[in-house]
Amino acid sequence: MGASVGFFGGAQTVTGSCFLLDIRGTKILIDCGMFQGLDHDKNYQKFPFNPEEVSYLLLTHAHIDHCGRIPLLVKEGFKGDIICTKPTAQIAKIMLLDAAKVMKEHYKTLYRKAIRKGKELPPPPLYDTYDVIKSFCHFRMLVYYDTPVLLKEDIKITFRNAGHILGSAFIEIEDLKENKKLVFSGDLGNKDKPIIKQPELPKDADFVFMETTYGDRNHKSFEESKKELLEAIVETFDRGGNVLIPSFALERAQEILFILREFYEEGKLPKCHVFLDSPLAIKATQIFKDNPEFYDEETFEIFVHEDPFDFPYLEFTEDVEESKTINNFKSNAIIIAGNGTVSGGRILHHLKNNLWRPECSLVFVGFQPKGTLGRNIVNGAKKVHLFGEEIPVKAKVYTINGFSSHADQSELLHWLSSFPKVKTLHLIHGEPEKMEVFEKVVREKLGNKIEKILMPSYGEVLELY
Ligand SMILES: [Zn+2]
Ligand SMILES: [Zn+2]
Image (cartoon, rainbow, N blue to C red):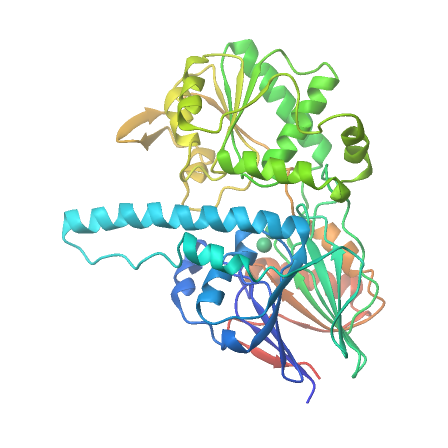
């Protein structure tokens, strides 16, 4: 008996990453992420395997679509070890605690609505804070990049830098008995990104499991996006308004701080107040500060002398009362707040206070999924409803697309082209249309290296060898 892989999330979709590898009866899970958006209901389905039989969970990185179902896995009987890098463990913990809190709040709102309207009660949250804390006991092994670990005498794993977010990894798994090698890409990074090191290139593998989030297109450059951000800030201040930046708490928020600090150092940032108005982003920033060994050279150089995420204009507003004082600033303030898709969080309050003012700006620095308030505004909504009020959208809206944490098509191809030969390439973590575009490009450009390309669907189990 050799090895098989089950695709239980992140298959023909970008969320819910979860792959079960079985090497001669040793069961190893790669990621255990939450389904989001249209697939959200899948979170409520039972795992299509017995969590009690899983010995290891290898976690590529701490985004919730890769770690969000860990507390559920533990609730369902997982007793094994979670293996990941130090920042991944630290970030996963704050992300999971936050997820439990958000689910509880969301449940309370739905519950009240159901009672009021005499409708069916919503399903309870997937897990609570207690379940999250219980799952922490399983983060038993921290690894560093490029340091092989023997899981058993015949199974070796190595985490390599994926350059996607702090601590992110792609994972090599070697079956020493059968002399076979598997590589799971996790999410691969955009090589222009600041702060963390560029993604490492893989060496060889028989079986590759590769993300394809942006398999269909190339991003604008990071430098160009930085220029656009600075222009948006300067123009807004010239008009006498504030700049609102809805941002994900993890990575994007730290990147924005890093870039604003750079503008400050270069004398380009007009005198202003910069508020990081997100308790989760503040906690994530602290984790960035605690892990300088994961920085790229430029950030490390800065770190040796000073804090790469701080500059004199910056203020952290952790509690609600502090956050409310931001309302007193009518101009020359940059407000970075969650959530990134404007579907909740403190950003809504700032929108209520600033969105109707033509002198202000709303600057999107991340992708806005369909169905979110952010997407509606990007699409040109003239008014929005916030806290029971109708607010006209008069502020100038900027969409800056080049700050992605994901590799684009050319970077994915570059990474893939490093393998001298691949027996089977499994395309995962992508929407089917995008995968098809990527598959075509791979066949055109790397056809001679890749024997077979598959796009497994949810629930599929494949015998590898
Ligand atoms: Zn990710
Ligand atoms: Zn992902």
